[in-house]
Image (cartoon, rainbow, N blue to C red; front, side, top):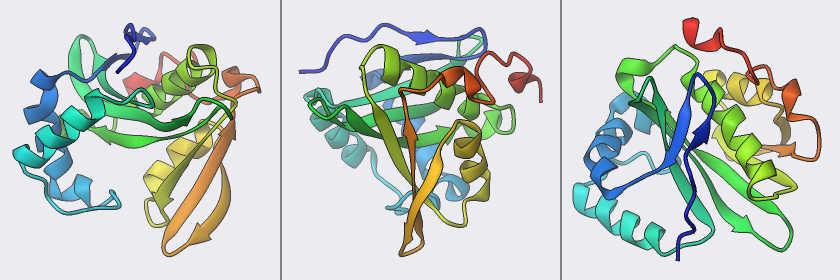
Length: 181
């Protein structure tokens, strides 16, 4: 059963759990040609597939997908999943920005807020992610948020981040100018 998670964030972005009412919107975002190429599975998804995923997701207590909002409007998504509650490790990802909201720094800020949530609320010790090695923009965002490359294989880079360090070192932490770009 999914835990109740209150919205969290900063003056720039707020993150709230995805709701069934968000599915049409997130599917449209995910299916954009210039977005889906960055996912491991880059095939377009159907609403039926997306709804089936959502109902499986809703029953999991180790998977949290957040809608990122700025000024009260949805601008993207971010997620923490595969949480190992015993070892305090999880994967972060499923980052995407709404096509009309790109280039404003929302995902970088959302990543910083998600890391703070993983540390403070979920009590995780570390997180990791996988990114396509040619996704230079995403790699820069992750590096600014303290992720470091661990390994490369089959066109993917694995990056990790310890959460027992000062998250304030993130280039996005508390930076109100990020959304001004």
